[in-house]
Length: 304
Length: 270
Image (tube, rainbow over the protein chains, first blue to last red):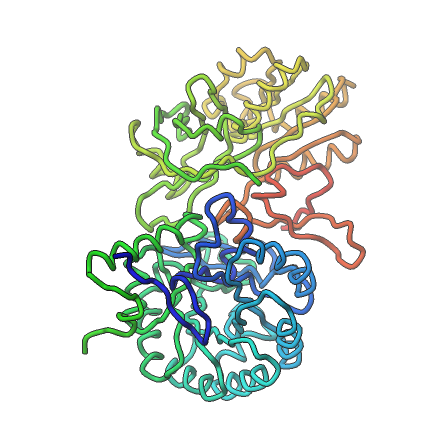
């Protein structure tokens, strides 16, 4: 019997729990040469802002042990170009589109949510309150539970789309943050965003990134991410999308057992552009081996 | 849609051709037969997650008869150290060919190719194609010293004019390759175009020379990149913009590049 990989998140029915993480999958079309992106559970597109953003000065990426630091600076085409040029092409592929968005002020977030809410072809919104690279914004919203709560509340008022709030790991208590966002009406959480990090060229005594600090991603952060998903899952009832260094089906299943209803693949897309498809197949194989009929049966199934 | 492969290629050979410089031949999927001069390949140098990212290498040449391609690389860091140790017969994870290569239509009859060190790699393939298109090709090859010169014998068999510059003067012109270029210009030699690949200071210098002499010129850049196919936005370089609302654009070395026209790149004042 073919195992059932379908999951439901905030009213969204997904054919499988495998999504691609914002910032690592462009607007989806870049992956067309590699596989049919319609096979994915969903894709979270590159974070969108009201106006196009040029991003940070290079160097923007640097490799670290089992990971990488990035300080792209949220370079994106802006909401108008996204809606007019990218979204119609994505919709033609029959892929479930989650739009990641961010602003520098409450008003920008609200305006974006209103704009996206009125647009056809979007399945859900993923609100980035945690990008560590933009000085005026991200970090503040994502590190104070009260601020995150109030912002989530405002966004919920202006959109009928399912709202996923993407959490920053750079906080003292992830459980408290998760709870405060749930209380404000978030439909789901995605976590974790990158961990703020730094790497120094000791000969030049300079940071290897022009932005000084960057976001750490890749397998190096996976144990932190699994622990945070597990803690958040204990604190909230809303579904969680697990993110952080997933390179294989085994990694994905680890997150699901910790309490994630779905997962997102990030850095691994850069290294093997067909990895998402391989992970979907790997999860299916695991389910056959373990005689698991429905993937939803093992969500949060960690033994006490 | 772009045509590129993401798969395995068996290593046919991997040998040191000069101190710390290696040439590797890899059996490859058919898309590599269509690789253009200046395009590159992303190579996974280890099976594990350290180092995690692929490494970009300019394609040195393709061998359509053998269904293979070659890269030329210098052992500089962790990735290339690991690569140098991989034995023939091993299947290598390769992704490519990627990027926008050199525009051969710009060459005119008397193109000059100027290389610094391992930057000779993509220019070798370019020289070969320009020669077969009937062009009078000059290659200016600059290196630190005589021992750092690469693939000189292969270059000589192409039917090009090879001019060598070494920083220590151990062979050819004493100084940089760009010094040689300036000398040719002073002598009023016929130059229809310039193609360059090498370290950034060299490219910046070639760019300046090309602009001041009104030469058609293309430069192949290097950058740290995570993906190589346009999604990570990690490899951008500052370029001039046509948009009145902006001072500059960030273009991706992996997609819009690695080859840029002279005058396009805005060099950072270091």
